[in-house]
Length: 331
Ligand SMILES: [Mn+2]
Image (cartoon, rainbow, N blue to C red; front, side, top):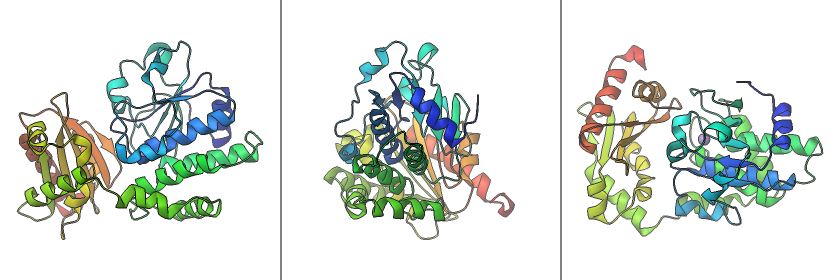
C-alpha cells in the first residue's frame, strides 16, 4: 500500500472511475461532511459520484447531505472505484465490510487516525484535526493546479462542518494553528460558521434532551472519581422510546463531570454486541481501545465488544481503563 503526497492524491482522485465515497460506521460530522465535500469536488471534475454509509446518517447531519446520492444501490455498479474517508480500519466499514471486497475493495483512503490499518493507497495525516481539514488542503491544491475553477460554498460548508464537528467546535486538543487557519480561510470565503455551529451543537431534538437527562441521572462514578461511565442497553432504549442516535451526545454529559479523566459510554448495537466510546482529558484511550480490539485517537477512541449485558460490558471497559490509569507512569 502506497503513501501518497497531496499532489499524487489530486492525480489519483482525477483518475477515479464512477467513484463511490464510503463513510465509517455510525457516521459522524467529519466523515459525512468530508464525504459530501469529496462528492462535490468529484462532480466539479465532471464525475458522477455517490456516497454510502454503513449506518443511517443521523438526522442532525441531514442539512449537509442535500442533493447527494446516498443510495446503497451504487454498490451494484461494476468497475466502480471506492474511496474511504475517516475510516481507519476495515472494521469501521461495519455492515458494508462484506460488500467492499474484490473489485469493490477500496483503492484510496484519506484519514487522520494515528493508529489504523493501511488497506488501500492512502493520504493519512494524523496532525489534521479532521479529515475535513485535509479535504480543504486538497480542494485548494486542485484549485492551484487548475483542476477546479472555484471553491463554491456548497463545497466549503461541509468542510467547515467536518472540522467543527471533529474538534467539538474547536475545543479539543486536536486543534492546531493550521485548524484555525483553515477555519479562518473558510469564513473569509463566505462560510456561515455561526449557523453551521448552531445546527451542529445547539439544536437538539426532544429525544436527544431526554437521552441526556437519562444519562445525567444514571451516571456511574468509579470509587476513584476519575472514571465516569454509562451503559445503555437496547431494552433501556426501548423503555425510554429512544433510538441509539439520540444518545450520540451522551458522552459529552459523561465527560463534563468535574474531576473525571476518562468518560465511557457503552451502547448495545442491533447485532447484540456492545460499542464503547472513550473520551479522556489526558490518558491514552486509543491504547486502551486498541487492547480491546478497537482504535481511535489519544483522547477519543472506541471499540466493540461481546459481553453478557451492557452492564457487564461497561464493567469490563471501566476495569481496563482503571488498570491503565491507576499507576501514574502509564498516563
Ligand atoms: Mn475524523
